[in-house]
Length: 224
Ligand SMILES: [Ca+2]
Image (cartoon, rainbow, N blue to C red; front, side, top):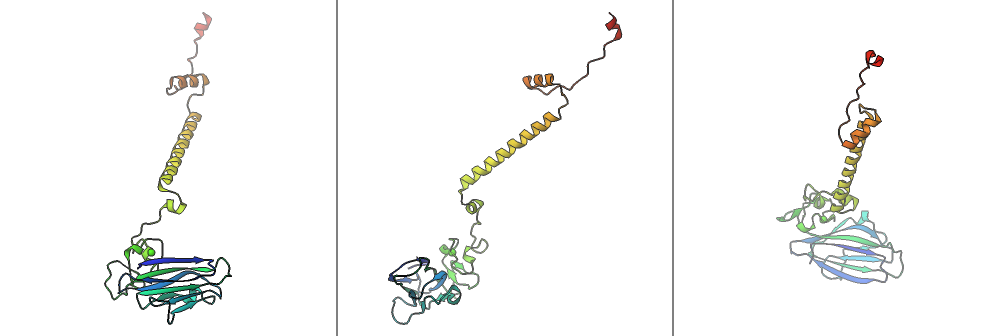
């Protein structure tokens, strides 16, 4: 029994397998939507609307099928069976990515999450998991499903702690550069240009004293 599943196949050869899924509730059924579909003409994916791979299949997907002409497939029962058959030849890119989602029709009471476009009810655990189960993206939205917005760290692919460290280091470097520039500007516009006084002021770590011209000597003192 599942609420949702993602099936991926890529480059599998000589395969003959079948798998059946069942919804958790009898009121549910399945919707199937491909995100990738590339099969050659000797490969077939059969989809049965029931618990067994027998009788009339709902779809036979092969090389003629694309994402556009397949669209979303809905079951009428609460089971779906997939039978996948491939031969020994084919490029490694052949395969598919299939999203299977259990849902209740809009006529039923929903205690979980309603998709925006279809009003289908899907399990709350299928929201905010990075998979577009509803098909319209509403189960992954920040406004409808209240998913947390993507952080800068997630965008850059780094952890939050490392991101904080990088931001703090950058802020420290900016402050250090700002202080250095202020000191340079201050030294360039200081009132005293006398190197002897500047050295003295640096040694005693005080503000440099403003320059003052010595008083003119009196003539009488020169005569003496
Ligand atoms: Ca989802």
